Image (cartoon, rainbow, N blue to C red; front, side, top):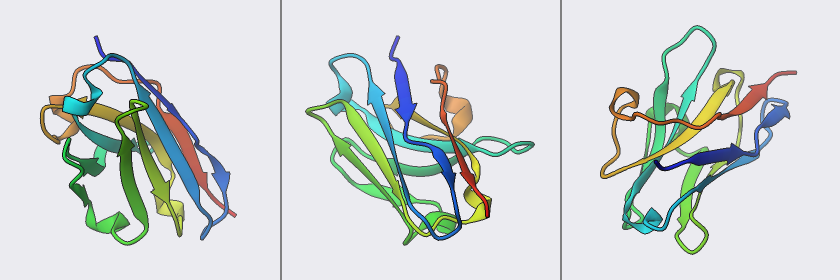
Length: 120
């Protein structure tokens, strides 16, 4: 079972930045497509950004131009650089891995996530 440890969340003011990191267990990280998801209180979990094993990234429209997903296969690490944060970005953020980038219901195991709060 692959395990995910997300970190980097916090409380920031609108317009500020955060960098989220996710460490993935195991030795097959470089074969996975990785994705970041988020879930705001009262809302369903949603896909935010994904990156293929070859490094091709895609984003939902709401974060294009503000968020950047990246990966470091040598460290089993996937990151999400979030700039220009808005109150509507407030959510718990999760990473996950798969053969391809999918929707939340396609994933079985999840980490604890990291809380991002944009307020002020």
